[in-house]
Image 1 (tube, rainbow, N blue to C red):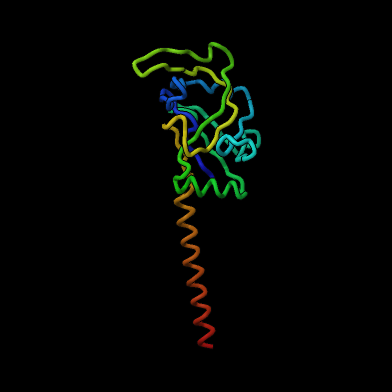
Image 2: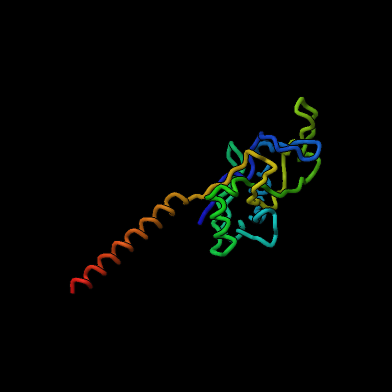
Length: 174
């Protein structure tokens, strides 16, 4: 069970965060991604609901021109299966992330026609999280293998039913 998407999208404004909005600038996560820092994946920022981590290879993160891309292999646990089902049903359709700004050069503030904007230039990424209500509406999460998996499951059920029908017919003829 894998999910993938964008935990952050560059140059995209957040929702109102209490009098200001935020945007993430390209390269903001480079420090974390190149520094070997362990990043965890949670459900709704809940540290007791771990879905994966970079240290064991279940979470893969990379930056591209769009933003912070992730691929997450979910655990075969109730939480993992539930998360996979909720993502595929689109109840969980977005992502979030937890971070710290390392110093004053990591952010800048500007008053614009859209209000006060905080731009994040460099952050220490701590975690990414599945969420139903994101601060950044442009984020996305999708089931990486959902269509094939659902199709394969349906096909297996039909084949098993045909086999059982064939066995029953054989037994009746005997």
